[in-house]
Image (spheres, rainbow, N blue to C red):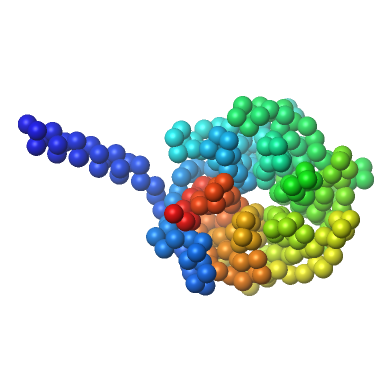
Length: 331
């Protein structure tokens, strides 16, 4: 009997392991040997959740060991953890009015304040807001950080990064308006990049056609903005002087040629502590060093919108259309 029981136990164990295996998607393209120090040789993109209309804004919450992300058209933020799987985290996430409206009305980019409060780019409410509830007990109760520039309504804040002093830098393309750039309710004649600080909103950049993802390089003296325009699929870099005026605007990397051939555009991205940049773009997710050299790509067959790093920077999470994907970077 004992050998039979041992065989049965082994069968159950192997069956459980098989059930827990994640589906894989895409591949990793190694352009430069330096990528080996970032992504281990046996890494594979794994699908950890699927079935969304347009997944965006992934954010790792170390406090509760959970990934949260927006489904923009559905006006929902979902949460996923290894232990509990997938569930709804917050709804409504980006449009809190009861008046029906079209367009992509949910939250988009998500980030945290220095003291751990959730900051949301809310398409439907046309603002950047902070959730008043703690992240471990979310509630749709928000305080506005910014909703206008010189009395003109913002269009649909898309992505944001919070500086260590609490200032919020964010982008405002028209994607959340029902008719986007042609929407009659659009009030600004440009698509801006802004800073919100001390209750004031300041225009930093008005020259980009579709400003989208935004992040600082280490030191917070340079920020990068992704331009989601198929005719100008470019990541731009900007320096800040001592009074936060923008100087030395320049092209960080131009992927316009690739955008003509592959799905996706420069969109959301993150920067690790060493200055490596993980940027959604044509064909999947691009990995650059701080100087703009391409180290490699995570090739994904669907348009990739954004990414997030775990607190220890050993795991990367991607949002790509209907999927949420995990890549284990380093052991």
